Image: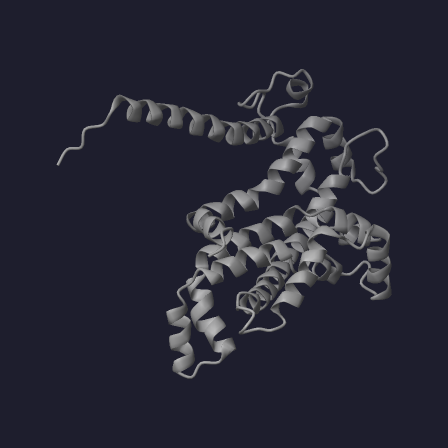
Length: 296
């Protein structure tokens, strides 16, 4: 049966399409501009002639970054951080959110734990005390200093906790009737049913680890241990840059570059992994955030 649409419905559709298209362009155009800037010549970039299409196409900015061995080393550190850090994040979120999703009758200490975690959401220990704690734990200049201090986000725990609360209790009770314990219920029942929330939190964790640069700058005494975000943040081309360790080929390449093209190449390289991963998690993203942010 054909449904007759009113004029207001079509007006809404047009208005909605225009608004969403503008929002999409506001996200896509800056990325296109950065890509075009990184692929343009130094003269075109300095003259401000680059829009969304490369002018005087050039790969020199990428050649300069790739020619440095420490660039690949920093990428390997970031990849390791994303893999190990995300695994820690997801494991701790799951084992924390599950008991907190129980009622006070099922888990008597729930209120005390929630109060404890809530305090950490609004009150931090401070930069200097945190540094002193990490120093006394002998974590400075180690790979684990990038993992352990940010091993669990209570914000993500709350999203996961609320998602678990919205799951059917009958399935969980059936698992207990069949003789499953809490660990078996979590791993074999709760987590498979929580894929939308897990995918969203997985994306948050990966982005957080990949883009984090301050902890590497603050806790790493050796620049050779910098993750990629910290490494790129320190690679600013100016007159004060140290050139003693550069080869003649790198010096010649550097002289033909501008700060704008190199910065653009750095920023585009930094967002490539997110652009690759996001399409695979996007179908879970909206559902996971919507359900996990609303209490039952």
